[in-house]
Structures are given as C-alpha cells and as structure tokens.
Length: 496
Ligand code: N01
Image 1 (spheres, rainbow, N blue to C red):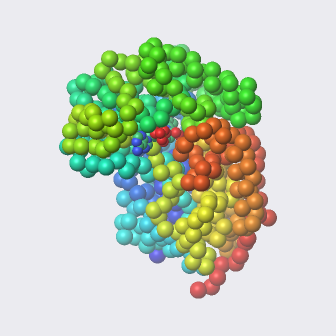
Image 2 (cartoon, rainbow, N blue to C red):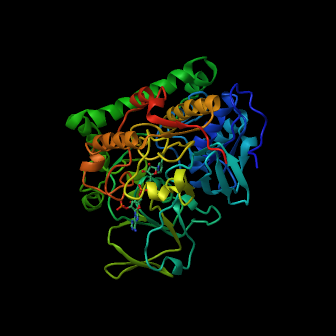
Image 3 (cartoon, rainbow, N blue to C red):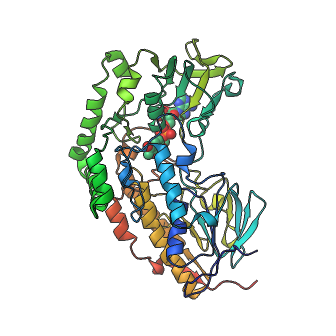
C-alpha cells in the first residue's frame, strides 16, 4: 500500500517516506520535505495530538527552561512570548501554528504508533497501531528521547488509594487545591512542579533521593516596548534569536572547554542559588555531593523560595513502599497523601523502542545495540538501510538547544534523501566508520563532568558512558553541513 499524498514536484524519483512522531523533530522533518518538493510522506503519531514533550508535559508550572525565543525553528521565529522562559501551553500552541502554516497537518495520522518496521530489501514495511500497514522507501524516527516515563519500581504503587501519575502524565482533572500532594524526584520537572504547587495545596511533600544542583536566573517579563519591537521592526526578532543562541553557545563553550575556570563560573551560580536557602539544615539536605553540571542543572527561578514555604517538606529518608494512605519511609514513618506525582524522569536510552526495527539480513535494533549504542553522526544506523533518526544517541544535550540540533540533523538527512531520490537504491553507514566515530564521541564525552563528576544521570547509558556528545552547536553545524557520502554504503535496491 502506498504512503499516499500528492505526487512530488521533486525532480528525481518520487519516494514514499514515513516519519514516526509528531513532536518538534517530526514536524520539522515534514516542513523540510515539503520545502524540497517532497510531499509523499506520512507522519505517524502515537498519541491523538501533535507536540511531543509539550503535549505530554502539562503539569502545573511547566515551562521551557531555555529561552523561548531561541526554542523555535530558525525559519519561524516567535516574537510573541511574553516571558524569557515560555510556558508549556504557549510552546505547544506555537508548534500547532507552525505545523498548520507549513501544511504538515494533512500528513499526520494520530493514534498510529509505529509497532514495527522491517526492511524488505527495497523498502520498509511498517506496521502501525491503528492497523495500517505501509511501505516506504525511507523510514525516519523522530520519536524523541525523553518521552517514555520511567516508573520507579517502588513496591505498593498500585495500592495507593488516591490518584497517582508520572509528571508527563499529569491529570488536570485531579484537583490539588487544599490536598496533601507528594512529589517523588527533584530534577527539572519536579522543580517546576514544586515551584507551582505551594500556593495551591494544603501540604507538599517532596521525596528526594539525591539533590540536584540548581541555578535561578530570573524569568524576566519582556516589556511591551520590547515585544512590539520584536514583532514589528524587521530584523529585530532575528537579531534577538541570534543573540540568545550566541549567549547559549558562549556559556556552553565556557562550561565544556573552559577547563576548571569555566566550570567554576557555573558552580558559582549554583552555590549562589543554594545560598538562598536560609535554614542550614535544609541547605545541607539540598547540597549535592557531586560536581556541578554532572546531572543536568535544574534551571528554575522559583525553586528556592518554593521549597522554603511553610507547607512544603523535603523528605530525604528513603522510600520503603507506597501504601493506600501514602508513602512509608525507611524509618517507619508514613507521609499521608491524597495525590502522588512521580517526577522520576524518562527512559532516555529507549529512543524509538518499544518499536521493533529489523534491517538488512534480519538484524534487529536490539541486536545492533546489544553491547552499546552505535549511531552514525546521530542520524543513521549501520545495517538499517534508508533509516534515519532525529535526536538519536549521542545527540548533544546540555550544550545545544534541541531545536537547533534537530535542524542540523534534518539538513543532513535531507541530503541523504536527495541522493536516494536521484539515484535510488539504499544507503546506510559503514559499520567500521560508525564505530570509529562513536569511539571518538565517547572519548570526548568521557572528558566531561557528566562522566567524571561522580553522579548517575540520564545522560549515561547502562555502562555509565555518556550518550551525549559535548559538541557545541556551531561545531556540529560545521561538521554536518555536508553529508559524508564516502562513509555510506550505497547499494542498488534488491529486486523482490
Ligand atoms: O527527570 P530527571 P526530569 N525513588 O531524570 C528521582 C528535560 N526537562 O523529568 O537523582 C526516588 O532529571 C531522581 O533521583 P536521582 C531535562 O533535560 C526539560 O526531572 O536519580 N527518586 C531525580 O531526582 C531534564 O534533565 C525541561 O537520585 C527517584 C528525579 O526522580 C530531563 O528532561 C523541563 C526514583 C528524576 O529526575 C529529565 O528531567 C523538565 C526512585 N525510585 C525536564 N527514580 C525544560 O524546561 C527517580 N527518582 C526544557
């Protein structure tokens, strides 16, 4: 069955393309394909709406902790954010608007999670949860990285009498007003929730396993004059976007390449934020025993004040189990709760799984990744012909805003697709070359505080090796400006 859609105006061979995921990467991929004149693509989305992480995360206080005016596509700036850190709902509205404006909506199919994809020798046979079976010459995973909630293995969760959910599945129909609410975790999601709840709830209990370093740059409100300037004066929004990116890159350069002095700048911010905790005992509990930047730094202006509110309690005693009435602690106490939120992070090494992927000679993704992750320049996999990824293993995190990374990766993948459209057949990266590049990235990443800083985090794979490249955005853009066809095997498609 064909993917469908209008015939491509593209000069070369018309290809069928399927994209899994309608988050910011999938939407971007769709826009870029259309801009190349390739319209014969479908985006299969597992949920009933687009927006990825901004659709999933609707907890109180959700916002983007990197500047909103930089967290946009470079070709679709948004001058309208009123605050430096845009609220989640406004970001979701932005992606909806852009998907509509660029004509991507009509390519979307909802409730159609890709269950499996198998390379037949000349195309991918794709099976979706809505019962559809599709064939496509190119299959792209834009599934994201932080989308599968990590539900901790705490005994008794199912016995809890009240509502409980993961932070990325916050149920807005559950009122928290005047309730006793528990939040497990103190990472970036938890910090935003903790900041929003004290004024609403009767009591908030925060269960901390390890403290996270945090910094608290103010969430400045843009003046009306500034917003009018961004909206109406030509070039101003672009200048602001470039300025924010240059600032972000400067900070990342300082942290990643500035040696001890560079690390110290961020450490100073973190210590200054911690100094705002007035009670020495609370401050002690909130002080990590690992290097600043080892876990992703929490960026949240309101966290310090929120955690010091009289109706907020930081619980550092370990959790034994969850019971009908609340959370039982190692010392035998019971924290009675009405609502429980697990802000316990994501299975960051799952990527597009549980989807099954079977490539050349029947090799599966699980086999390919059995010992450790391999991935060619974050976008392609050996033995997986005409399969591409956005935000795959070793994508930068913490150094580059995800939208910028997705744009660089998409530009690279478009070049590979162009080649296929012109010449047909299939492309996949050479195994030895891929492994050599991965080794280079791992060597680089092992020099970073993520590896040396003495902590556990979602940056690390199960062997403790960072799955994140410390590359800066400008370096990545330069390295991936032109596709390295010499690193790819280009085979004619097999006849069936
Ligand atoms: O998840 P996390 P997150 N018992 O993995 C604790 C992005 N993000 O959702 O540190 C008790 O950071 C765990 O404890 P520990 C951003 O990249 C972006 O907060 O493992 N506690 C930790 O405290 C971020 O880094 C924005 O000891 C348990 C917490 O749960 C990433 O998403 C906003 C536990 C998990 O922290 C993930 O952040 C929010 C257990 N069994 C997030 N299991 C933006 O604004 C886990 N924990 C862009």
